[in-house]
Length: 468
Ligand code: URP
Ligand code: ZN
Ligand code: ZN
Image (tube, rainbow, N blue to C red; front, side):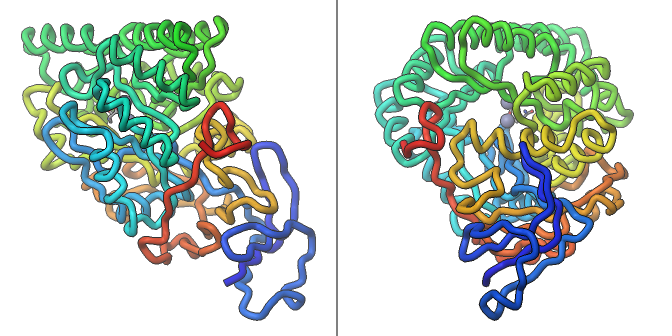
């Protein structure tokens, strides 16, 4: 059904104006003032966006949905995670494929794809996790890139589990350079983490409040510096995920100034939560255990500053959903066994708007760029992140007058808790379309599951000019 969005204030990464948007099939075909519905084919769906923003569909470039990790599985399915994403205005997710070290990359790719295909309500793609690098892995990685998965993921952390050694890191980056794909990287020095964890546990420091001490800021900064050295020597493009502190940002910027091509991501929890949450009484702090850890509150202002200045390109979530009662509890008596992660895919846009735009920390263009457009550009998501004729009709009609409260009782994520229980939001996605199909109406997810599609992607080196 054709879709006409009338009277909205269209805000993109670069523009701010009033106009109507007409969508036919899956794409935007006209953007003009005063489009008369009477002159359009019968059956056109009209949404009045008077008093609302119209944003391009938001993109979360770092989520985990299917995640075998730390002796358990993340709680969401693609059905729950994609509905949660849409409720929060996110129309495209990029999930990390995290194969076990013994797993073949192609088999892992098929497994992860099968979890989303026919189930997801929003569009999606993947970063291909490289947890081993040998001849077979290299052959299969080439094939996976040929199927449009034009980014890799490496973990410098998680010793003995997902982490790669330096030989594997070097070869992965060399292959990425050859293929023109981006390498996303979790940067923490895994040996330092393992040693400090062992020391803290041996000293009887077993609660979630010690998680930060086991991986302090220099551990992360060292990881970034390490990645930058390898990127410099191979020429690969790198994207540093969930950067949590000014020390890590400084190492990345230092690398960029030496000629490394790359981008920095911050995730919502690091912008608005701090390490005091991990000190909550009664093991409540486990809800706030993620890696890199939540930092001293004084780290937040420099992260917002870097976002405003453009040193940080994207705001993702690193959505990694584990229940409090049955999963986070695995780490009672030993914080190193608490499954890492904070569920947040549903709340990113509203909390970034509330704590970023409404407070004046970032303007509307930075908000749209960081939560949508930059990810589309960096990861070559064709047709996404913009509002222009020919683009995918992924649109968010956003109500800035809405006031609401976050709660696990009402969220769409599968977890039994919210890290933001009781927090106020000052805006919400009233209507959301994915390629022209209206999936959210008056804030309620109404779309049919399974509508989501694997997004065609371009290579980093040729973004927006050619397919891989
Ligand atoms: O704590 C986190 N970040 N959990 C998910 C896995 C990862 O490191 O991204
Ligand atoms: Zn990570
Ligand atoms: Zn992650």
